[in-house]
Image (cartoon, rainbow, N blue to C red; front, side, top):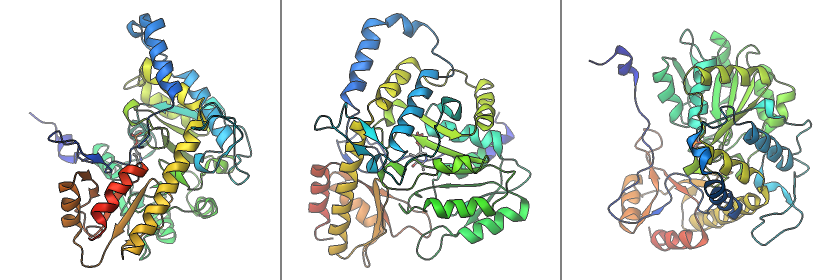
Length: 389
Ligand SMILES: *Cc1c(COP(=O)(O)O)cnc(C)c1O
Protein backbone atom coordinates (compact mmCIF):
# COMPACT_ATOMS: atom_id res chain seq x y z
CA UNK A 1 0.00 0.00 0.00
CA UNK A 2 2.91 2.34 0.64
CA UNK A 3 4.65 4.35 -2.06
CA UNK A 4 8.32 3.65 -2.70
CA UNK A 5 8.98 7.23 -1.54
CA UNK A 6 8.08 6.19 2.00
CA UNK A 7 11.30 4.21 2.23
CA UNK A 8 13.27 7.44 2.28
CA UNK A 9 11.42 8.90 5.26
CA UNK A 10 13.26 9.04 8.57
CA UNK A 11 11.09 11.38 10.64
CA UNK A 12 12.55 13.92 13.05
CA UNK A 13 12.25 13.03 16.73
CA UNK A 14 11.51 16.20 18.73
CA UNK A 15 12.45 16.73 22.37
CA UNK A 16 10.06 14.56 24.40
CA UNK A 17 6.85 16.03 25.80
CA UNK A 18 5.76 13.51 28.45
CA UNK A 19 2.30 13.73 29.97
CA UNK A 20 2.92 11.58 33.06
CA UNK A 21 4.14 14.45 35.22
CA UNK A 22 4.94 18.14 34.97
CA UNK A 23 8.60 18.62 34.11
CA UNK A 24 10.67 21.76 33.76
CA UNK A 25 11.29 21.65 30.01
CA UNK A 26 14.87 22.45 29.10
CA UNK A 27 14.98 20.08 26.15
CA UNK A 28 13.57 21.86 23.09
CA UNK A 29 15.29 25.26 23.16
CA UNK A 30 11.99 27.04 23.68
CA UNK A 31 12.01 30.48 25.31
CA UNK A 32 11.11 30.31 29.02
CA UNK A 33 9.32 33.66 28.86
CA UNK A 34 5.80 34.27 27.55
CA UNK A 35 5.37 36.52 24.50
CA UNK A 36 4.98 40.27 24.91
CA UNK A 37 1.76 41.37 26.66
CA UNK A 38 0.99 43.15 23.39
CA UNK A 39 0.76 39.77 21.66
CA UNK A 40 -1.86 38.53 24.13
CA UNK A 41 -3.72 41.79 23.72
CA UNK A 42 -3.66 41.58 19.91
CA UNK A 43 -4.97 38.02 20.03
CA UNK A 44 -7.76 38.89 22.47
CA UNK A 45 -8.79 41.87 20.42
CA UNK A 46 -8.69 39.93 17.13
CA UNK A 47 -10.99 37.23 18.49
CA UNK A 48 -13.31 39.69 20.22
CA UNK A 49 -13.57 42.37 17.56
CA UNK A 50 -13.14 40.35 14.38
CA UNK A 51 -14.48 36.83 14.93
CA UNK A 52 -15.69 36.90 11.31
CA UNK A 53 -12.04 36.78 10.20
CA UNK A 54 -11.85 33.23 11.49
CA UNK A 55 -14.46 32.26 8.92
CA UNK A 56 -12.41 33.74 6.08
CA UNK A 57 -9.13 32.62 4.52
CA UNK A 58 -6.18 34.60 5.86
CA UNK A 59 -3.89 36.77 3.70
CA UNK A 60 -2.02 34.02 1.77
CA UNK A 61 1.14 36.12 1.55
CA UNK A 62 1.07 37.54 5.09
CA UNK A 63 1.92 40.97 3.73
CA UNK A 64 1.41 42.93 6.93
CA UNK A 65 3.47 40.36 8.81
CA UNK A 66 6.29 40.59 6.26
CA UNK A 67 6.31 44.37 6.70
CA UNK A 68 6.48 43.96 10.47
CA UNK A 69 9.34 41.44 10.20
CA UNK A 70 11.34 43.68 7.83
CA UNK A 71 10.77 46.61 10.15
CA UNK A 72 11.94 44.65 13.19
CA UNK A 73 15.11 43.54 11.40
CA UNK A 74 15.91 47.11 10.40
CA UNK A 75 15.32 48.30 13.98
CA UNK A 76 17.30 45.58 15.72
CA UNK A 77 20.00 44.76 13.18
CA UNK A 78 18.84 41.14 13.41
CA UNK A 79 20.51 40.41 16.76
CA UNK A 80 18.15 41.17 19.63
CA UNK A 81 20.51 40.69 22.55
CA UNK A 82 22.90 43.42 21.31
CA UNK A 83 20.25 45.96 20.21
CA UNK A 84 20.04 49.29 22.07
CA UNK A 85 16.96 50.00 24.16
CA UNK A 86 16.44 53.75 24.45
CA UNK A 87 13.62 53.89 26.94
CA UNK A 88 10.58 51.99 28.09
CA UNK A 89 9.12 49.91 30.81
CA UNK A 90 11.05 47.47 32.92
CA UNK A 91 10.24 44.52 30.66
CA UNK A 92 11.24 46.51 27.56
CA UNK A 93 7.72 46.51 26.13
CA UNK A 94 7.03 49.68 24.18
CA UNK A 95 10.68 50.77 24.20
CA UNK A 96 12.36 52.28 21.14
CA UNK A 97 14.99 49.94 19.71
CA UNK A 98 18.00 50.72 17.55
CA UNK A 99 20.65 48.33 16.23
CA UNK A 100 24.06 48.18 17.82
CA UNK A 101 26.74 49.75 15.64
CA UNK A 102 28.13 46.30 14.88
CA UNK A 103 24.83 44.84 13.72
CA UNK A 104 23.53 47.78 11.70
CA UNK A 105 22.32 46.56 8.29
CA UNK A 106 23.84 48.78 5.55
CA UNK A 107 20.62 48.78 3.48
CA UNK A 108 16.89 48.66 4.18
CA UNK A 109 15.37 45.19 4.44
CA UNK A 110 12.09 45.35 2.47
CA UNK A 111 9.01 43.07 2.71
CA UNK A 112 9.85 41.72 -0.78
CA UNK A 113 12.98 40.22 0.78
CA UNK A 114 10.92 38.22 3.31
CA UNK A 115 9.08 34.94 2.91
CA UNK A 116 6.98 33.94 5.95
CA UNK A 117 5.82 30.39 6.66
CA UNK A 118 4.33 28.00 9.18
CA UNK A 119 7.44 27.59 11.34
CA UNK A 120 10.94 27.65 9.91
CA UNK A 121 10.73 23.87 9.54
CA UNK A 122 8.17 24.47 6.79
CA UNK A 123 10.24 27.30 5.34
CA UNK A 124 13.27 24.98 5.27
CA UNK A 125 11.23 22.28 3.57
CA UNK A 126 10.29 24.71 0.79
CA UNK A 127 13.92 25.83 0.54
CA UNK A 128 14.97 22.19 0.02
CA UNK A 129 12.31 21.77 -2.65
CA UNK A 130 13.09 25.01 -4.46
CA UNK A 131 16.88 24.97 -4.50
CA UNK A 132 18.39 21.50 -3.97
CA UNK A 133 18.55 18.77 -6.58
CA UNK A 134 18.76 15.00 -6.39
CA UNK A 135 21.44 15.12 -9.09
CA UNK A 136 24.15 16.24 -6.65
CA UNK A 137 25.05 16.22 -3.00
CA UNK A 138 24.02 18.96 -0.61
CA UNK A 139 26.92 19.89 1.69
CA UNK A 140 26.25 20.21 5.44
CA UNK A 141 28.10 19.63 8.73
CA UNK A 142 27.93 16.14 10.22
CA UNK A 143 26.44 17.54 13.43
CA UNK A 144 23.89 20.25 12.77
CA UNK A 145 20.12 20.70 12.94
CA UNK A 146 18.82 17.18 12.55
CA UNK A 147 15.88 18.17 10.36
CA UNK A 148 18.16 18.78 7.34
CA UNK A 149 18.85 15.06 6.80
CA UNK A 150 15.14 14.36 7.29
CA UNK A 151 14.30 16.68 4.39
CA UNK A 152 17.17 15.19 2.39
CA UNK A 153 15.33 11.86 2.64
CA UNK A 154 11.92 13.40 1.98
CA UNK A 155 13.03 15.15 -1.22
CA UNK A 156 15.53 12.51 -2.23
CA UNK A 157 18.50 14.87 -2.01
CA UNK A 158 21.84 13.13 -1.39
CA UNK A 159 23.96 14.59 1.40
CA UNK A 160 27.66 15.14 1.89
CA UNK A 161 28.11 15.35 5.67
CA UNK A 162 31.37 17.01 6.66
CA UNK A 163 32.78 16.16 10.13
CA UNK A 164 33.28 19.05 12.54
CA UNK A 165 36.80 20.00 13.58
CA UNK A 166 38.23 18.76 16.88
CA UNK A 167 37.16 22.03 18.54
CA UNK A 168 33.55 21.46 17.35
CA UNK A 169 33.63 24.35 14.86
CA UNK A 170 32.62 23.90 11.22
CA UNK A 171 35.35 22.68 8.91
CA UNK A 172 34.91 25.54 6.45
CA UNK A 173 37.68 24.42 4.10
CA UNK A 174 36.41 20.85 3.87
CA UNK A 175 32.85 22.10 3.29
CA UNK A 176 34.01 24.39 0.49
CA UNK A 177 36.10 21.65 -1.12
CA UNK A 178 33.07 19.36 -1.05
CA UNK A 179 30.81 22.06 -2.52
CA UNK A 180 33.25 22.74 -5.36
CA UNK A 181 33.41 19.07 -6.30
CA UNK A 182 29.85 18.94 -7.66
CA UNK A 183 29.03 22.66 -7.69
CA UNK A 184 26.77 22.11 -4.67
CA UNK A 185 24.71 24.13 -2.23
CA UNK A 186 25.73 24.42 1.42
CA UNK A 187 23.46 24.55 4.48
CA UNK A 188 24.27 24.97 8.18
CA UNK A 189 22.89 26.59 11.29
CA UNK A 190 24.78 29.66 12.55
CA UNK A 191 25.26 29.52 15.48
CA UNK A 192 25.25 25.78 14.95
CA UNK A 193 23.19 23.24 16.88
CA UNK A 194 23.71 21.28 19.00
CA UNK A 195 27.19 22.75 19.49
CA UNK A 196 26.05 26.35 20.24
CA UNK A 197 29.12 27.78 18.45
CA UNK A 198 28.83 30.35 15.66
CA UNK A 199 30.94 31.58 12.77
CA UNK A 200 31.58 35.30 12.53
CA UNK A 201 30.05 37.25 9.68
CA UNK A 202 33.52 37.66 8.18
CA UNK A 203 34.04 33.91 8.22
CA UNK A 204 30.73 33.36 6.42
CA UNK A 205 31.63 36.12 3.94
CA UNK A 206 34.89 34.32 3.16
CA UNK A 207 32.97 31.08 2.65
CA UNK A 208 30.46 32.77 0.35
CA UNK A 209 33.32 34.21 -1.72
CA UNK A 210 34.77 30.74 -2.27
CA UNK A 211 31.48 28.82 -2.61
CA UNK A 212 29.69 28.21 -5.94
CA UNK A 213 28.06 31.51 -6.95
CA UNK A 214 25.24 29.95 -8.95
CA UNK A 215 24.05 27.74 -6.07
CA UNK A 216 22.01 28.80 -3.08
CA UNK A 217 23.92 29.04 0.23
CA UNK A 218 21.65 28.66 3.28
CA UNK A 219 22.38 29.99 6.76
CA UNK A 220 19.85 29.06 9.46
CA UNK A 221 19.87 31.81 12.10
CA UNK A 222 17.40 30.22 14.53
CA UNK A 223 19.65 31.17 17.49
CA UNK A 224 21.44 34.29 16.29
CA UNK A 225 19.44 36.69 18.51
CA UNK A 226 21.17 35.33 21.64
CA UNK A 227 24.63 36.54 20.66
CA UNK A 228 25.67 35.34 17.20
CA UNK A 229 26.50 37.45 14.14
CA UNK A 230 23.74 37.79 11.56
CA UNK A 231 24.58 37.44 7.87
CA UNK A 232 21.73 39.73 6.76
CA UNK A 233 24.26 42.50 5.91
CA UNK A 234 25.86 40.08 3.41
CA UNK A 235 22.70 39.92 1.28
CA UNK A 236 23.84 43.02 -0.60
CA UNK A 237 27.03 41.24 -1.71
CA UNK A 238 25.73 37.72 -2.32
CA UNK A 239 22.49 37.22 -4.30
CA UNK A 240 22.68 33.44 -3.66
CA UNK A 241 22.45 33.79 0.15
CA UNK A 242 19.28 32.60 1.91
CA UNK A 243 18.87 33.29 5.64
CA UNK A 244 16.26 31.29 7.56
CA UNK A 245 14.96 32.55 10.90
CA UNK A 246 12.22 31.68 13.36
CA UNK A 247 9.99 33.20 16.01
CA UNK A 248 10.21 29.96 18.02
CA UNK A 249 13.32 30.78 20.02
CA UNK A 250 13.95 34.50 20.48
CA UNK A 251 10.36 35.72 19.87
CA UNK A 252 8.89 33.40 22.52
CA UNK A 253 6.63 31.98 19.83
CA UNK A 254 7.22 28.23 19.35
CA UNK A 255 3.49 27.63 19.78
CA UNK A 256 2.60 30.08 17.04
CA UNK A 257 4.56 28.31 14.31
CA UNK A 258 6.10 31.29 12.53
CA UNK A 259 9.30 31.14 10.56
CA UNK A 260 10.67 33.26 7.75
CA UNK A 261 13.53 33.70 5.39
CA UNK A 262 15.40 36.77 4.22
CA UNK A 263 16.89 36.71 0.73
CA UNK A 264 16.89 38.61 -2.51
CA UNK A 265 13.45 38.88 -4.04
CA UNK A 266 13.95 36.39 -6.89
CA UNK A 267 14.69 33.64 -4.36
CA UNK A 268 11.73 34.75 -2.21
CA UNK A 269 9.61 34.45 -5.35
CA UNK A 270 10.83 30.89 -5.97
CA UNK A 271 9.89 29.79 -2.44
CA UNK A 272 6.52 31.53 -2.83
CA UNK A 273 5.92 29.47 -5.98
CA UNK A 274 6.53 26.27 -3.99
CA UNK A 275 4.14 27.45 -1.29
CA UNK A 276 1.44 28.27 -3.85
CA UNK A 277 1.79 24.76 -5.26
CA UNK A 278 1.35 23.05 -1.90
CA UNK A 279 -0.24 24.92 1.01
CA UNK A 280 -1.05 28.43 -0.06
CA UNK A 281 -2.45 29.72 3.25
CA UNK A 282 0.41 28.59 5.48
CA UNK A 283 -0.06 31.07 8.34
CA UNK A 284 -3.46 31.28 10.01
CA UNK A 285 -5.10 34.59 10.84
CA UNK A 286 -4.32 34.47 14.57
CA UNK A 287 -0.67 33.54 14.06
CA UNK A 288 -0.34 36.48 11.67
CA UNK A 289 -1.81 38.84 14.28
CA UNK A 290 0.48 37.43 16.97
CA UNK A 291 3.55 37.72 14.75
CA UNK A 292 2.77 41.31 13.78
CA UNK A 293 2.30 42.33 17.41
CA UNK A 294 5.53 40.58 18.42
CA UNK A 295 7.64 42.22 15.71
CA UNK A 296 6.23 45.63 16.64
CA UNK A 297 7.32 45.19 20.24
CA UNK A 298 10.98 44.28 19.70
CA UNK A 299 11.97 45.99 22.98
CA UNK A 300 10.31 43.24 25.00
CA UNK A 301 12.25 40.56 23.14
CA UNK A 302 15.52 42.47 23.45
CA UNK A 303 15.11 42.25 27.22
CA UNK A 304 14.11 38.59 27.06
CA UNK A 305 17.13 37.68 24.90
CA UNK A 306 19.43 39.61 27.24
CA UNK A 307 17.95 37.79 30.25
CA UNK A 308 18.52 34.41 28.59
CA UNK A 309 22.11 35.35 27.62
CA UNK A 310 22.80 36.47 31.20
CA UNK A 311 21.46 33.22 32.70
CA UNK A 312 23.42 31.25 30.13
CA UNK A 313 26.71 32.84 31.06
CA UNK A 314 26.05 32.27 34.78
CA UNK A 315 25.17 28.65 34.12
CA UNK A 316 28.31 28.11 32.05
CA UNK A 317 30.41 29.50 34.91
CA UNK A 318 28.68 27.13 37.31
CA UNK A 319 29.21 24.08 35.11
CA UNK A 320 32.88 24.86 34.50
CA UNK A 321 33.43 25.34 38.21
CA UNK A 322 31.98 21.88 38.73
CA UNK A 323 34.42 20.39 36.23
CA UNK A 324 32.16 20.17 33.18
CA UNK A 325 33.45 20.83 29.68
CA UNK A 326 31.13 23.43 28.14
CA UNK A 327 31.40 24.79 24.62
CA UNK A 328 31.28 28.61 24.35
CA UNK A 329 27.63 29.33 23.61
CA UNK A 330 26.12 32.12 21.51
CA UNK A 331 22.67 30.53 21.79
CA UNK A 332 19.92 29.84 24.32
CA UNK A 333 21.37 26.44 25.18
CA UNK A 334 24.64 24.88 26.30
CA UNK A 335 26.36 21.73 25.10
CA UNK A 336 28.31 20.08 27.88
CA UNK A 337 29.89 16.89 29.20
CA UNK A 338 31.93 15.74 32.16
CA UNK A 339 34.64 13.11 32.28
CA UNK A 340 33.39 10.04 34.08
CA UNK A 341 29.74 11.04 33.66
CA UNK A 342 27.73 9.01 31.16
CA UNK A 343 25.55 11.30 29.03
CA UNK A 344 22.52 9.04 29.03
CA UNK A 345 22.76 8.34 32.76
CA UNK A 346 23.07 12.07 33.50
CA UNK A 347 20.01 12.80 31.38
CA UNK A 348 18.02 10.11 33.23
CA UNK A 349 19.13 11.31 36.66
CA UNK A 350 18.09 14.89 35.83
CA UNK A 351 14.77 13.65 34.48
CA UNK A 352 14.10 11.70 37.69
CA UNK A 353 14.49 14.98 39.54
CA UNK A 354 11.87 16.63 37.35
CA UNK A 355 13.84 18.39 34.62
CA UNK A 356 14.05 17.40 30.97
CA UNK A 357 17.26 18.10 29.07
CA UNK A 358 18.28 16.69 25.70
CA UNK A 359 20.62 13.77 25.15
CA UNK A 360 21.44 12.52 21.65
CA UNK A 361 22.40 8.88 21.20
CA UNK A 362 24.15 9.96 17.96
CA UNK A 363 27.73 8.57 17.76
CA UNK A 364 30.27 11.32 18.43
CA UNK A 365 28.05 13.41 20.68
CA UNK A 366 26.64 10.78 23.02
CA UNK A 367 28.70 11.97 25.99
CA UNK A 368 27.08 15.41 25.77
CA UNK A 369 23.92 17.00 27.13
CA UNK A 370 22.17 19.87 25.38
CA UNK A 371 20.55 22.04 28.01
CA UNK A 372 18.16 24.86 27.15
CA UNK A 373 18.51 28.03 29.22
CA UNK A 374 15.40 28.67 31.29
CA UNK A 375 14.43 31.30 33.85
CA UNK A 376 16.65 32.03 36.85
CA UNK A 377 14.45 29.80 39.03
CA UNK A 378 14.56 26.91 36.57
CA UNK A 379 18.35 27.15 36.27
CA UNK A 380 18.63 27.28 40.05
CA UNK A 381 16.63 24.05 40.30
CA UNK A 382 18.94 22.46 37.74
CA UNK A 383 22.07 23.69 39.53
CA UNK A 384 20.85 21.97 42.68
CA UNK A 385 20.53 18.67 40.80
CA UNK A 386 23.88 19.01 39.03
CA UNK A 387 25.71 20.29 42.11
CA UNK A 388 27.22 16.88 42.88
CA UNK A 389 27.09 15.06 39.59
C1 LIG B 1 14.31 25.26 16.35
C2 LIG B 1 15.02 25.28 15.05
C3 LIG B 1 14.33 25.40 13.85
C4 LIG B 1 12.84 25.24 13.76
O1 LIG B 1 12.12 26.27 14.13
P1 LIG B 1 10.54 26.31 13.95
O2 LIG B 1 10.33 27.68 13.43
O3 LIG B 1 9.99 26.09 15.30
O4 LIG B 1 10.10 25.28 12.97
C5 LIG B 1 15.05 25.54 12.69
N1 LIG B 1 16.39 25.51 12.69
C6 LIG B 1 17.08 25.35 13.81
C7 LIG B 1 18.58 25.31 13.75
C8 LIG B 1 16.42 25.23 15.03
O5 LIG B 1 17.10 25.03 16.14
